[in-house]
Amino acid sequence: MSRWILLLALAACGGKDAGDSGTTTGDEADADTDADADADADADADADADADADTDTDYDPNCTAVIDTVDPAAGETNVSTDALVTVTFDSELPAGGTATLTVSGVSGTNVVAADNLSMTFTPDAALPAETTLTIDAQVCNDVKSSTFTTLPPAIVATSVEGNTYLLGWDDITFTQPNNFDALIGIIEAIPDVEMIDYVLVQATEVDEVAETLSAVASSAWGTPGSLTYTCPAIDAGSADFSLNPLFSIGPTDYEFDAGGTPIVIEDFELYGRFTDTADAIEDIWLTGRVDVRDFGGCTLLSILAGGTCVSCSDLQPECLDIVGSAPSAGIEPGFDLEGSCL
Image (cartoon, rainbow, N blue to C red):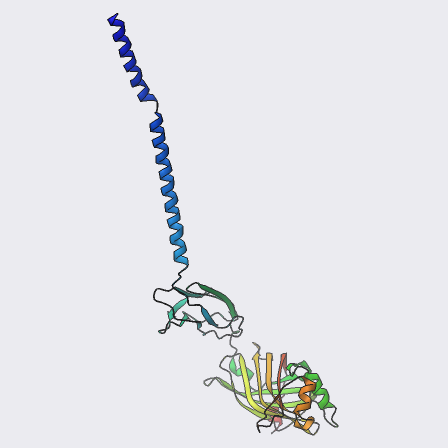
């Protein structure tokens, strides 16, 4: 009997050992689950910490400056290939504040001004000609992007010397005064007045060192190859040619004879761009003040033409501002305006 009791006791002990080696108790399973949950919680905490760190890096609440201006301006054209790019801020960039400035496809150096109110990008080399470039600027938490377009390649400066260009009067679109045609209609209604057909412009000499060109101008009637023009030609002086192939003439007083009646345009300026072969001027823009006191007076004409009376050079309010543009002016082959007026 005692033998059987001993055997049963040994069997019971052996069964418990076998169970310990092949199974997990409920308490142990709970411990594993708790460990996994703790691990997941730790992972979530790490992820949250990383996300918070990234957000804090991208946004700095202590840096409040914003971009005020960008130069060259958005959409600006005919920008010099040696231009710098500058952004200004509305307030000082704080110590440790972020500011970046890049130009697409262009390497260069950024420098923040000593007053911390601007930053300038200096290209390592000349900007590519006749190319639209993108500016990406950031200061603190403010970001701006814009584009500008550089000048066409410079032409051989002396290739324009002696050329006379014909700007058709009917090719000019005037935006000031608002109803320029009404102004011309009133002037043409005056007996013996004959409006011009062309404005003639001749580049007489180029100074490559001073980057200027000398020019004369006149008025003409008729058709190319058979022109009647006024002499003496107006000396327009030295025109700016530093942005070759762009140029600007004036300001100068431009007077033309309209059938015996003089029409005076004060502070006349003409801007344009020579084509690469110098056989035409393109992208023309002109401005000035026309004295209308001999054509009914500015008070009446400003109402009819939709303009505003401004002071002429004698301080009398008898002038109207004019602004116009034209697509191109072709060359008059073999015609020497200056020589013909001698």
